[in-house]
Image 1 (spheres, one colour):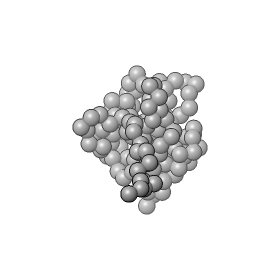
Image 2 (cartoon, rainbow, N blue to C red; image 1 turned 60 degrees about the vertical axis):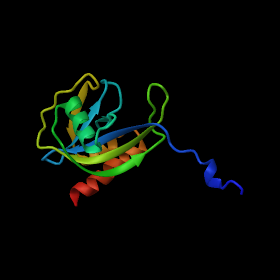
Image 3 (tube, rainbow, N blue to C red; image 1 turned 90 degrees about the horizontal axis):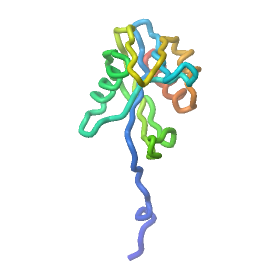
Image 4 (cartoon, helix red, strand yellow; image 1 turned 180 degrees about the vertical axis):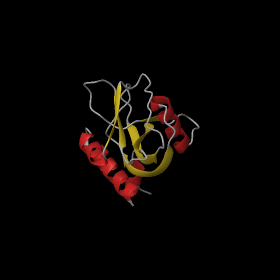
Length: 143
C-alpha cells in the first residue's frame, strides 16, 4: 500500500484569536490603537483554554474597553497575518458585534480609541484582510 498525498499534509498548529467590528447604536464603529503613532485597528484578543468563542470575545472587549457587547456572526477568518511574541502563528476570526454603550475605559493594551463612520473604519484598517472583515460586517449590519 502506498502513502496517499493526504498523509503528507501538515495541519495548522497555533493560537486562536478573535477581533470585533463593534457598532454603536448610531452605527459608528469602534477603533483602537496601542499608541498614538501606531495604526488604528479593531479590538479583540485570544481565547483561553476551555472558553467558548462568544464568551471569550465578550470578555476581551470588556477587559480592553469596558464595553458590554452582543457578539454576532463571524464575518471573516484569516491566517498568516499575525504571530505571537514567540513566533507562533495565529488563526483570527472577526465578528460583527453591537453595543448600546459608547463610554470607553481602555486597559493597558491601548492608548487611544475613537468611534468613526463605517466607511472611515474600513479606510483606517492597516491590512487588506481587516478591510475585508470590516466591509463584510458593514454589509451584514446594514441588512
